[in-house]
Image (cartoon, rainbow, N blue to C red):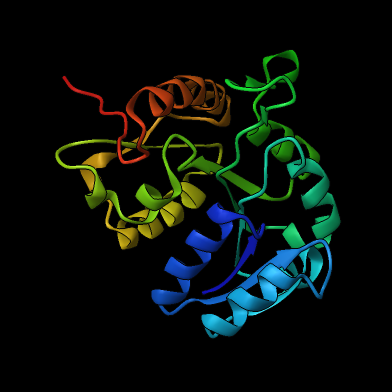
Length: 214
């Protein structure tokens, strides 16, 4: 597929590198066409780079790997016409570090980032996933031994099936992928990040994840 990864931070670069390694045509999007981090990534991974709109325009699938506090502005810059009908994989978390650690989780009126994006771009097909773990675990679940889970939320069953296939290509087994239902369920996984942050501070490593046992 042609995949746009919006965001040049550690999460964006990790996801883009893994996707390129799976032979997808990846374009990294940023605010400006000459972003140094995006250019460096593209040169090292046989990829492309450009503005958010450049990346999204020709993509079959769009990954939002930006901070949740700016995600709505980023997708607005990408352009509604460039998101129409496309799966938008939202891995963001709206964390406010303005008062230090631990960060506050920003959820206006209790609504998740994923829902805000879906409401703003109703013709896109937003799927929330991968936001409850370290970026290294996102693309290599074997870093955490034993059974653990990745969650899916979304209103479009076909979009979730497409994202599930992508997760399996990353190494997630079918029984590790839990479909939580419609996009309102993204509220719970975005709030779960508060616990993840606390555990990271306690454990001193990001190589852990949540497991649902029963």
